[in-house]
View 1: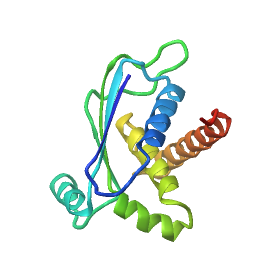
View 2: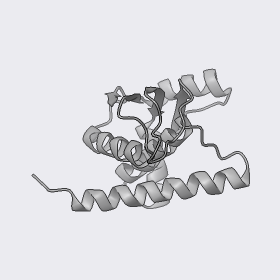
View 3: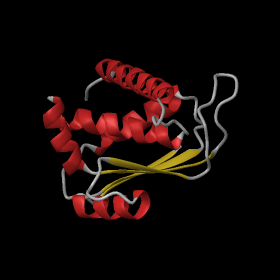
Length: 156
Protein backbone atom coordinates (compact mmCIF):
# COMPACT_ATOMS: atom_id res chain seq x y z
CA UNK A 1 0.00 0.00 0.00
CA UNK A 2 1.37 3.35 -0.96
CA UNK A 3 0.09 6.35 0.93
CA UNK A 4 1.75 9.51 -0.22
CA UNK A 5 1.36 12.62 1.95
CA UNK A 6 2.51 16.04 0.79
CA UNK A 7 2.09 19.13 2.94
CA UNK A 8 2.12 22.32 0.88
CA UNK A 9 -0.13 24.23 3.30
CA UNK A 10 2.49 26.03 5.35
CA UNK A 11 0.79 24.64 8.49
CA UNK A 12 2.53 22.10 10.72
CA UNK A 13 0.51 18.86 10.59
CA UNK A 14 1.42 15.51 12.15
CA UNK A 15 1.58 13.53 8.93
CA UNK A 16 2.34 10.29 10.79
CA UNK A 17 -1.15 10.41 12.36
CA UNK A 18 -2.74 10.85 8.92
CA UNK A 19 -0.63 7.94 7.64
CA UNK A 20 -1.67 5.64 10.51
CA UNK A 21 -5.30 6.76 10.11
CA UNK A 22 -5.34 6.00 6.40
CA UNK A 23 -3.66 2.63 6.91
CA UNK A 24 -6.18 1.81 9.63
CA UNK A 25 -9.19 2.86 7.56
CA UNK A 26 -8.03 1.00 4.45
CA UNK A 27 -7.50 -2.13 6.50
CA UNK A 28 -10.92 -1.82 8.16
CA UNK A 29 -12.56 -1.33 4.75
CA UNK A 30 -10.75 -4.40 3.37
CA UNK A 31 -8.95 -2.44 0.67
CA UNK A 32 -6.08 -4.25 -1.02
CA UNK A 33 -2.64 -3.59 0.44
CA UNK A 34 -1.65 -2.83 -3.16
CA UNK A 35 -4.00 0.17 -3.43
CA UNK A 36 -2.51 3.64 -3.65
CA UNK A 37 -3.79 6.93 -2.26
CA UNK A 38 -2.34 10.43 -2.10
CA UNK A 39 -3.11 13.07 0.52
CA UNK A 40 -2.27 16.67 -0.30
CA UNK A 41 -2.50 19.48 2.24
CA UNK A 42 -2.84 22.92 0.65
CA UNK A 43 -3.39 26.51 1.73
CA UNK A 44 -6.67 28.39 1.37
CA UNK A 45 -5.74 29.96 -1.97
CA UNK A 46 -4.92 26.63 -3.60
CA UNK A 47 -8.03 25.02 -2.12
CA UNK A 48 -10.22 27.85 -3.34
CA UNK A 49 -8.83 27.41 -6.87
CA UNK A 50 -9.58 23.68 -6.80
CA UNK A 51 -13.02 24.28 -5.33
CA UNK A 52 -13.91 26.71 -8.10
CA UNK A 53 -12.36 24.56 -10.84
CA UNK A 54 -13.91 21.23 -9.85
CA UNK A 55 -17.07 22.10 -7.92
CA UNK A 56 -17.87 25.53 -9.38
CA UNK A 57 -18.20 26.82 -5.80
CA UNK A 58 -16.58 29.99 -4.43
CA UNK A 59 -14.19 30.06 -1.48
CA UNK A 60 -11.97 27.40 0.04
CA UNK A 61 -13.46 24.17 1.35
CA UNK A 62 -12.21 21.66 3.90
CA UNK A 63 -11.71 18.52 1.80
CA UNK A 64 -11.96 17.45 -1.83
CA UNK A 65 -11.68 13.90 -3.14
CA UNK A 66 -10.62 12.85 -6.61
CA UNK A 67 -11.33 9.13 -7.15
CA UNK A 68 -9.39 7.33 -9.86
CA UNK A 69 -10.12 3.61 -10.34
CA UNK A 70 -13.61 3.63 -8.79
CA UNK A 71 -12.61 1.06 -6.17
CA UNK A 72 -15.13 0.05 -3.49
CA UNK A 73 -14.70 -1.42 0.00
CA UNK A 74 -14.00 -5.13 0.05
CA UNK A 75 -15.03 -7.96 2.32
CA UNK A 76 -13.02 -10.38 4.42
CA UNK A 77 -13.39 -13.01 1.67
CA UNK A 78 -12.83 -10.61 -1.20
CA UNK A 79 -10.73 -7.50 -0.56
CA UNK A 80 -10.78 -4.58 -2.94
CA UNK A 81 -8.49 -5.31 -5.90
CA UNK A 82 -5.21 -3.41 -6.27
CA UNK A 83 -5.48 -0.03 -7.91
CA UNK A 84 -5.29 3.71 -7.57
CA UNK A 85 -7.86 5.02 -5.10
CA UNK A 86 -7.16 8.65 -5.91
CA UNK A 87 -6.32 11.89 -4.14
CA UNK A 88 -7.61 13.57 -0.99
CA UNK A 89 -6.94 17.31 -0.73
CA UNK A 90 -7.19 18.90 2.72
CA UNK A 91 -7.03 22.53 3.81
CA UNK A 92 -5.67 22.77 7.38
CA UNK A 93 -6.67 26.45 7.67
CA UNK A 94 -10.32 25.63 7.01
CA UNK A 95 -10.02 22.58 9.28
CA UNK A 96 -8.67 24.79 12.06
CA UNK A 97 -11.65 27.17 11.84
CA UNK A 98 -14.08 24.23 11.81
CA UNK A 99 -12.31 22.65 14.79
CA UNK A 100 -12.81 25.82 16.84
CA UNK A 101 -16.52 25.85 15.94
CA UNK A 102 -16.85 22.12 16.80
CA UNK A 103 -14.84 22.54 20.01
CA UNK A 104 -12.23 19.93 19.26
CA UNK A 105 -8.62 19.99 18.05
CA UNK A 106 -7.46 20.70 14.54
CA UNK A 107 -5.87 17.23 14.58
CA UNK A 108 -9.31 15.69 15.30
CA UNK A 109 -10.85 17.73 12.49
CA UNK A 110 -8.15 16.53 10.07
CA UNK A 111 -8.84 12.93 11.15
CA UNK A 112 -12.53 13.45 10.40
CA UNK A 113 -11.85 15.13 7.05
CA UNK A 114 -9.31 12.52 5.94
CA UNK A 115 -11.74 9.72 6.78
CA UNK A 116 -14.54 11.59 5.00
CA UNK A 117 -12.38 12.10 1.91
CA UNK A 118 -11.34 8.44 1.86
CA UNK A 119 -14.96 7.31 1.99
CA UNK A 120 -15.69 9.55 -1.01
CA UNK A 121 -12.80 7.86 -2.86
CA UNK A 122 -14.51 4.53 -2.16
CA UNK A 123 -17.82 5.65 -3.65
CA UNK A 124 -19.70 6.86 -0.59
CA UNK A 125 -21.78 10.02 -0.83
CA UNK A 126 -24.14 12.03 1.35
CA UNK A 127 -26.45 13.69 -1.18
CA UNK A 128 -29.51 11.72 -0.05
CA UNK A 129 -30.57 11.20 3.59
CA UNK A 130 -30.06 7.42 3.49
CA UNK A 131 -26.61 7.81 1.89
CA UNK A 132 -25.72 10.41 4.53
CA UNK A 133 -26.74 8.09 7.38
CA UNK A 134 -24.67 5.24 5.93
CA UNK A 135 -21.59 7.34 5.17
CA UNK A 136 -21.57 9.33 8.41
CA UNK A 137 -22.26 6.20 10.47
CA UNK A 138 -19.32 4.40 8.87
CA UNK A 139 -17.20 7.54 9.30
CA UNK A 140 -17.97 7.56 13.06
CA UNK A 141 -17.17 3.83 13.35
CA UNK A 142 -13.82 4.25 11.59
CA UNK A 143 -12.80 7.25 13.68
CA UNK A 144 -13.84 5.52 16.92
CA UNK A 145 -11.89 2.36 16.04
CA UNK A 146 -8.87 4.46 15.01
CA UNK A 147 -8.84 6.30 18.35
CA UNK A 148 -9.11 2.95 20.16
CA UNK A 149 -6.17 1.59 18.13
CA UNK A 150 -4.17 4.73 18.90
CA UNK A 151 -4.74 4.27 22.66
CA UNK A 152 -3.41 0.70 22.37
CA UNK A 153 -0.39 1.74 20.29
CA UNK A 154 2.94 1.47 22.14
CA UNK A 155 4.54 4.87 22.74
CA UNK A 156 8.19 5.31 21.92
